[in-house]
Image (cartoon, rainbow, N blue to C red; front, side, top):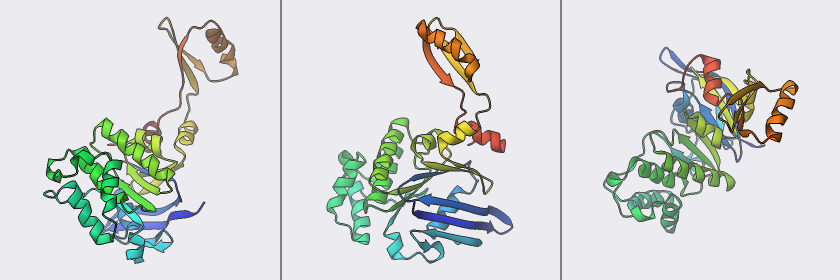
Length: 282
């Protein structure tokens, strides 16, 4: 697969504090990639390097075939960004905020209503940003980021502090963008979000990647218990080893129609992260 993003031996220091340590990553075209880690792990620093806002201390990073030290307007025209600072004008309406953006980037203003409909803000088209909820503001920022149909979309904690219903809408939109060919680079400390959306993830701790892979594969890799839990219809909870020795008992429960539910013991990503680092995400 074609690599849209590469980081080769990236290091970044601020004064005497080293934030990133010989970081190596690659993101393929058309995938949703998740960079996961707690606050202060270096996630935002990586996005700032990839988008040309800061330069690495050493190493080389590229996006869309261009070294991030030399990103130009042609490259910026192909990327979208949803970062901590929304950059919206609070006194302007949703429409006028996007109108200003479209005029700067030469985007047909007809796309404004289309993209507001896509993020379900059509009814708020004339409402000033100051009157929007946090979830609505985040959807407007996302609308601005995708209005020019970017090849690459950067999302820095896009659903932090947002209600579950709004999160679901954003997730659905991101999956639609992926289907249309957009590559998405997502940072989050929400492991459930990463499991649902990402093709590959990297677990970041203190500026280093401590694990990389497909979310489900990582959970299976660190499944040390290898047990099956069965809830019977009488309310009894039965735990068995996941192996041939338990097959007869499991078959008998199913044959007698006693099974209410059955679950294997794979850990979630947060459990994997804690096992690797001894830290909880926050």
